[in-house]
Image 1 (cartoon, rainbow, N blue to C red):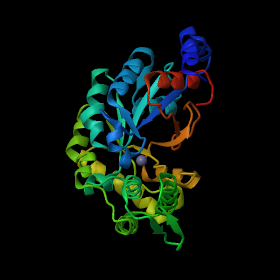
Image 2 (image 1 turned 180 degrees about the vertical axis):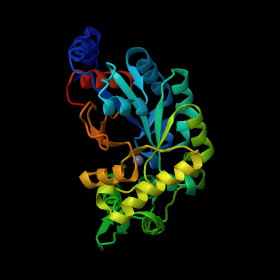
Image 3 (image 1 turned 30 degrees about the horizontal axis):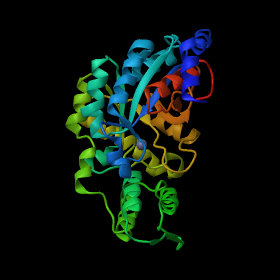
Image 4 (image 1 turned 45 degrees about the vertical axis):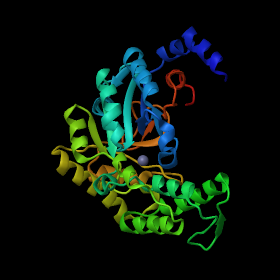
Length: 330
Ligand SMILES: [Zn+2]
């Protein structure tokens, strides 16, 4: 639908009326990064970055026209069947980028909006971006015209389309690896492509000081695993380490309980299953969010909650939310 048509429908409040008669459900928005100039880091972070000015407008919209909730409040309402306030919105950030602390948090604080920040613990401790960003950078910036993968298949890298295909294939392999094995895999590709992230990009990950500061400001810190694998494709022992060790380290650094988890969603589908949700529960998480699209409500399993991917513009987000609350697909 054209933008002007969407604006007409939003202005008519028809969607809002449709939503007002439904049992209240909440939209959990999934952000990653907020920067003044998203194009500057598109070779590493891809299209995960929201423009700072547009993000400010989006938060103003949420503060004025929706009911911001914290993840703790959402879990409490769903667990106890207390009922959700109408038009509830929960803000979340995945991965643990520095801009979450330096740019997003001050904006959230200006509008009194609580947020949950899910941290990829190994990346914070080793000052390196999650592996999908490292591989994206290597494939986009290599000068090599040919690459041979682990199965001995040759990939031509002579145009952006072919590079993207080779990257996606490498991601399918890498998402099944964790820890040191994953690191060796990524370093081998960086070496073969003679292309690796510039050192200054290590500043894109938050420090523990910044993460502690977010907690002091009243925001919630959760886990996004140790090394960002696809949890549905790794073995039991590795899954337990990703869930439990990340929780333990964050708790030691923050001196508080870490109760919330976000499943990484790299490459293959699905990115969670009934077994992974039971492991998350056994390790002691009260909630886990996925990247499955939709609202959440009473009766949902708290260990695999849907989220809504916020589009990059103010009106795009308003359209996302009004359609979702009116019961249309998001
Ligand atoms: Zn992630």
